[in-house]
Image (cartoon, rainbow, N blue to C red; front, side):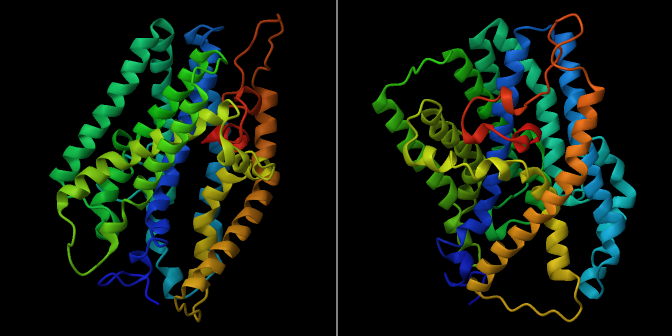
Length: 407
């Protein structure tokens, strides 16, 4: 059974195969979640502290919380893991190691989504996400402080930021002839996928949702029927965004779909996904999330949430070991084999993440807690709380856990 589509045949040409390409919407889920948590907590802090105090403190805390374990994984993959395999596939990683030798400092400064500009992401390519999230976090206080002065102005600024990003995405898709799905190439990655000015809408939607939740003050301002309508609308929009890539994945040998459809899907899909998340989560905040809330509130997600950041960082290294380290290994694709591999490698990644969490991430977090001010200063004044920590998050599975703190 082939994976690449030809005349509607192949895994990618099936509805279930869309999970492969639409999986990139998971990144937008994390952008939404990060924007929600950051706005929720910083809006709380902004009410009790001067901006000249909490903004620098938040940035420093975030940098120190992320960077040690981040660089541990990058350097470990670059300098240590390189001796673990052999053969042509393993040697193909030498190009990526050379990129690390040249561009490692861009990871340290969280600019590796911009430098080098006209080349793929430099050292450890999957980390393009982190500078985007850091850059969004640096912009967020502007929106939060404006919202404190005037809620309408704050929401208007968030809306204008999202619309400006969408207009640029529309223009770039036409200007650079970008395509989605099986026809996407390096231009899609360089001119759209990893750029902050095209990926910020979900972050802004998450931030707007958090500010609206705070403005509601715990009051349920939506009727029961309204909550039901939000759930249904969210499911509809999420389904359209997720399966909307289906027409673009029917045949690798020909164009098939007019370019204007690529333009509108690229422009609208990620903001629409973020709006769907807001619609699905809002009823959950008030105990009206039905089956969605039940699934998201399962206790199993709490310990898993503490590992998701490291699972994201470690999964490329585990996949390299699994698929590239053995010179004699041959892979014959089969759909059921693929399901088993996904499940097996997910377990291996989780196990590796647990080890690094216990031996590196947790000790670094404890050292940072000793070095930085506690929640209450010596004089009884509140010191800057750790940004996006568990106890600052509103209830619910989407806002708990250390992974939420750092992504």
